[in-house]
Length: 185
Image 1: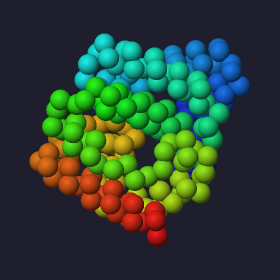
Image 2: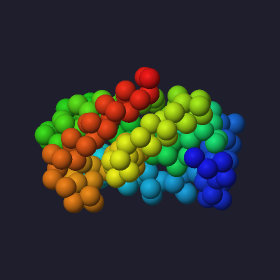
Image 3: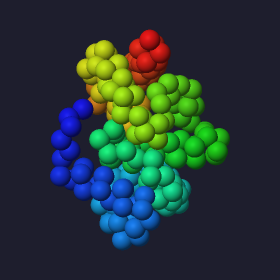
Image 4: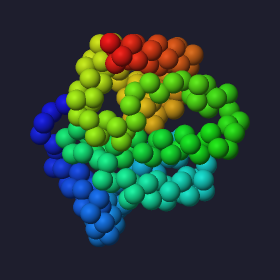
């Protein structure tokens, strides 16, 4: 991870830091700059617009409550926000009893890495994760990032890498097992 943040990332990190100090204008600015992207992540996972609209409000409540857990430089601010949105969306899916076999399969894939809050608190841990991702084949590491940080569905990733859906599931499952093994070494 580069130690120099892009100007937009730095601005978002600053807004998160100000939210941790309960700055409502910073929260409003953060919402304006990031809500479209986070809504896209939530909608992609939930696949129901009205449910996604409700969930995105709950995501921003969590961001407001947990802003003090974000540590600048330890984790990309956008990745942290996307992870909060993704995790909340998966919680919503679990609560509604998924009807799709693909969603069932997604919920069975273990998330062996640390939670976003833990990774943000411990930049050494982030370095270990980056190292372990580096041990995977590049396209598999990108598929893991796409699924677990950017919220892409298995179908979207299979189409992106031009592989059958079951192959993508296998890639992700095996990659997560390798990551777990590397992180516990």
